[in-house]
Image: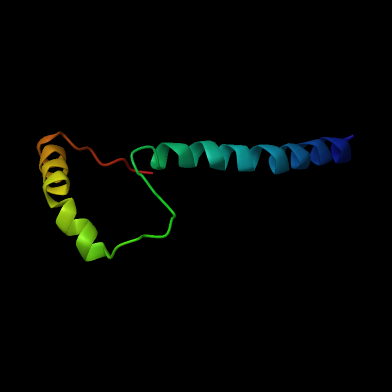
Length: 71
């Protein structure tokens, strides 16, 4: 009897732990943008062309309220 219960619990752990970890990671990456592609120009050119946009975004975020989440 106890052997069957332990087998069922171990199977549930194998199934639900990856699901839990995936759902937990969604919350930590919600406000991050990532791209994986080959850049045509150098990073200096990109920063020069988008300096105003980056500065404006940084200033806007610095004025907003920020609360760090603890794990």
